[in-house]
Length: 364
Image (cartoon, rainbow, N blue to C red; front, side):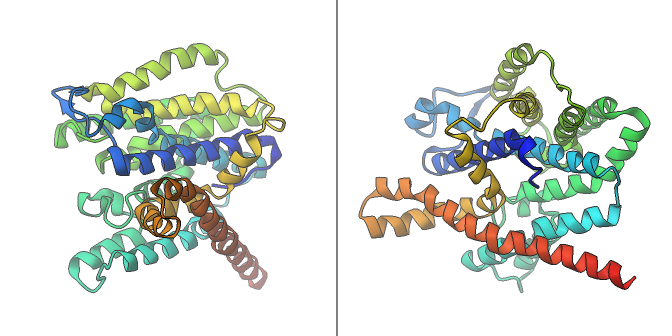
């Protein structure tokens, strides 16, 4: 996701919040469990994987940080379109490729090596090719195959492919109607997915991450961007919206028939919070600067963190002779790794992409 300047400082801060939510969720879940089991149609609070899961149950909602990322992505990309006032399809996809792919492919190859995946075997080749083509979120066998966090990179890349179509709908019907269109398409896909595969046991599955399912969530960000660009609020009664949507979101995660809506309900809550954050004064808040910094390296941090959690804790524990110290040092260490990835790989990729585009058009 791109930086859009100081006027969107609230979005930079929320990007940091989003990656913190995901990082804490994965770190906590890898030790104490990610979710409560189902007992019929309801969560079973009597049989948690650990007592700590009950004591710190709000942490299990950290996956909603990915919903926030989707909203922020739609916001940043649509705001960039509004500011440029023109849209070149080939340039858009060129920039997206050079923005996300260099860091992604480096992380992908690294984890293939660390996981000892033989890409010459049939299963290894399937894993590599599906991930390289960003279609691994379509199959159960590849969904969590190399890095469990990579599914959202594929889904977001597929949402980029839908952006020109979203702009077409916007030109015909307006951005508000785009919300209804994408929600309706998501509703049809939900019904189809449940009819074919049944109610999901998990909140994140291939059918639930299909781009038609998450298009509404991404469009929410575009909706907020359009309102923000024209100096309007997307949600005029934010407290009322939050007081309704937040409890409904939480309830949806506890009642199995509603879980297909949980990710999108989290996105609605995220959009409301983003709308508020954009109109707040963050500069004097003592957490704003560190959160914005973490937000700047959030893409690399997202790519690298999950498979490395136990590896890094193990090595830090051997150095410090303390499990507690190792866990406390984990996040600063990962931020340092992510900062290097951001400065060296991400920025270099953007520079190369821009340079090649300019060179190509100078020759033509």
